[in-house]
Image 1 (cartoon, rainbow over the protein chains, first blue to last red):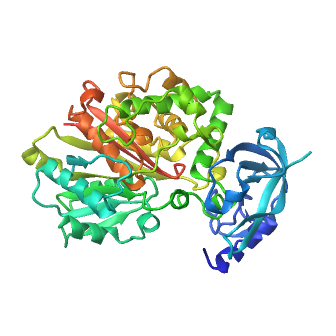
Image 2 (image 1 turned 180 degrees about the vertical axis):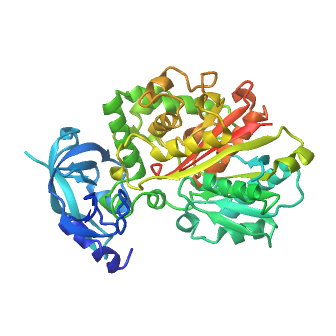
Image 3 (image 1 turned 120 degrees about the vertical axis):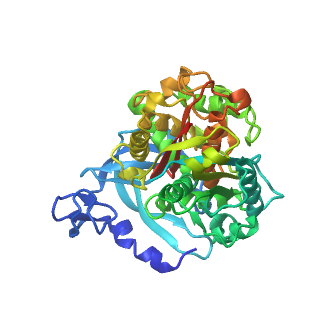
Length: 131
Length: 385
């Protein structure tokens, strides 16, 4: 179990989908970086990622990490957002047999897990099907 | 830079070694390698290990293992690159001898994985992925490779049966390797119908949890010519590369870019191409990983790895035998030891010592070891002199 600092320092990304856009070449990095991987530039502006995207690939986790035991089975996928940035997250609100590559999803703020009985309740983003 | 040879190899049977500690399994393998080389001392030591801290609560392996091997006060250090720790340690040993800094260097790899529960092992292994942006959301290593598998199937038409065939082939090879953890045959149907871990991958698509160690002894080629009692195997190429640690940040999730890059550099250094390689040990931590690896190494065209496996091209007796040792799948995958054990298998083959699983006339072999989902990768090319 970690101290709370490790959790709250990621909040801008996990709660608000904040990313860094390179001020030189325009590439978007999520999470933000200090150096642009595309052009080497070091200055960025903070932007918010779009919430719409499509599933590029996915799996259903049947043997989970300990913190996720009570959610099993659950789907995880790579979601490409409408601006081309990809994120990896759970796909909620649908049963495993509804999942399909290419399905449109929307990123929502959700509870992700609990760190045991006395730890932090962890929040973040999940994808849900756009119906 | 001077030429370097592998003059000693050592491995014991791998498995769930309840009665043996990390230090014991390491020292057993290291002593075998030293005896095989016939040397009376070593000058320096590297230890590949991914996560002794999480598996047995022990860091500082360089000092511990040099002490227990009885070689202190030589310099000894642990090298970590997740599941590529063994390959990375081998490369450091190679560089140290090639540079002229040391004459005789021992490279060992070790992982003691069964001292934690299944959940503990899952957590330790998951530290090779992006903790904050992959693992935080509940993904596991089988889950990451499952997503790569689905993408490969949908893009290239790779079938579930083709993927399962990797396990069938590697278990068949493993049955011929007395060191392998799971010396049992499996069928395509058994693989597909075994317990689902992360769709579409089942338990028989996954490499096991293993206790094990492996070691090799390196020295300058010129010295090897004077002291070696067995056929001399030269390190012809050594390369390493890295990629995004998180799979969703890669341009093509089905492509192991770091493996391709490392292979390109190793081929160049050895002045050979994929068609000059007689056999290879590749990092089949999951069945799909072998398919992606043989594509990235240039043994088959991109997207054709599944079909080539199904056609028997990678089987013993095929065009390019892959994982004659049984691979990680059947031999076992004590993560830090794997990269070193791959070198042991290639040397065994090049010495013509592989018995039932011998590739006839093998002169040149390749070992590819990767960390995580191939965020790090080493490729080594060995040749018999």
